Image (cartoon, rainbow, N blue to C red; front, side, top):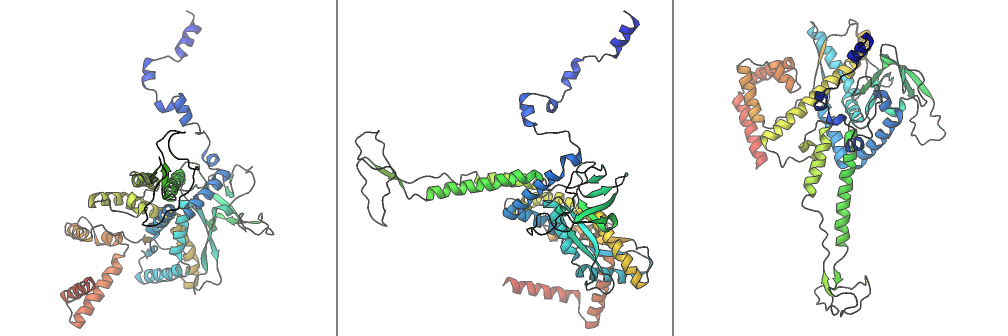
Length: 467
């Protein structure tokens, strides 16, 4: 054998029986596999979620949320549980007086612009639209003496090119630099779905990236626009509604007939002749004589079947899974839960909420506070560098408050936790709570009231309410 032949034999891939044993069933090309994965593609993240696909998903998602009670409840619950009554700021500079003033003024501004309500709105938009845009704009009519910064929520439909993207750094209305940083956003002045035919829907403004916040979930590397979070559940929502309507239609069809007349005799038998579908008027509390050879019976609809509730529960459970929501929260029904299973499901749900809150702090709140502080510091003579801060959210109510309170006391006694951590779980600032506790103690000593007196008052109040 020549040297060239030996080299070719060495480089030639060798067949090994172990390769057959190590193959993946999911990568096979059988008839069933090819049919099951016929819609799978090899597109990039942005190509897979192109403008046409995202518009279709948004339309269907909005329709389902608007017409499906479960979908609407899930989206609202997710937004309410994530945002609650809104985040609360804690400044951590060395000057307590400055911290207190900044926190108070920011809280007043947040109430003026309805920060909590707008955060709930963008959380709902990300769930049903896939993304939301927040424009940091000036509002001269804002009723705040220090800051005129306002948050304008923009729907995903309004950020678009409306033409095929020829620039590789443009992704449907967002222009990026070569490092992947957004530089500008093309925002339509009017919604493309508006009903005013005289409006020029092509008019758009180019907004610098420093004035825009893009809130979406990146499910793939390289994805620059978001898709609705309930996308995997959209077919299931449709199945749920169709099944309910089908069961209702079957029950109504059966209820439309008070009875049916039938005969066991063969065609041309000894039964008397009756016209097909001939109605017979029935009177209440009256005996009825049937024609010879004919019988009367009621139509049995078989609906709803015994598995009706179980089927809806399984579909709803599958729907809620893509949003990390437990079944009892999605269904609004905990009748089948015990204490242990309810708490276990809620632990996973609360963890996903905390993850989302951390994302909101990073993507939205820190940028909003920096923009607010730049304007606020100019009018109050403060350093231009914003102070380090922390954010508090509403705490979660425990399934068994008594057990949780005893566990908290035990952890504090064993020094495995701190007051700051335990108060933060409830969305409270430990320093503010300590100040409030001292005020209450001083006031009680001044009035000659003991803690036992206050406890007795609460106990009597609860007994009066029970009666």
